[in-house]
Amino acid sequence: MNYTPDQLRRRNESLWTPVQAVTAPVQFLTFIVSLILVIQYFATGQGYMAAHIASSIKVVMMVFITITGMAWEFDVYGKYFLAKEFFWEDMINAVSLVLHLAFIAAWLFGASERLQMTVMLVALISYVVNFIQFGRRGLMAAKQRKAARVLDTQS
Image 1 (cartoon, rainbow, N blue to C red):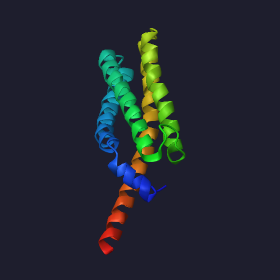
Image 2 (cartoon, helix red, strand yellow):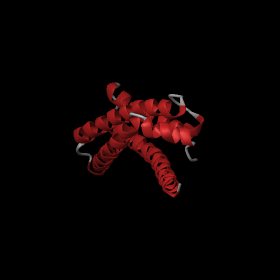
Image 3 (tube, helix red, strand yellow):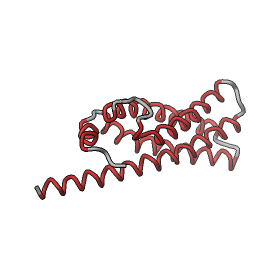
Image 4 (spheres, rainbow, N blue to C red):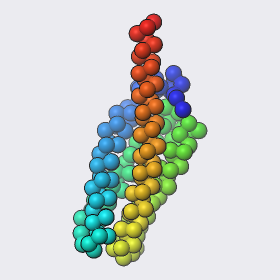
């Protein structure tokens, strides 16, 4: 789905667009580190603390990008969450956020290390789905901006 011209303008003017553009790669990096450490934990039974710290940072990034994403969505669509244009991205993001927070809950309630890492692995898998959705959306927006620039130069 493309942005309407007004939505594209609001997207380009939003303070939150560059915030999302900067934090998304940082979150992806925390995902990679967390995934490697969680897999290492399952493979060796070692490295729980490193995996826990990396996963906790990933949770913080997930919460931060969700909150700033809601502000961005309000700027562009006039709704903080579940705007019809972003419904599926928001739904999968909500599932992923709940799973990330479930990792923290598992830790706080004293679940075993293995259960905590299992919850985090599921959260990381859900993040991949959400990442693909937003990556696709970003590519579509870039194509739309490029097409708009071409039209502007032809005018």
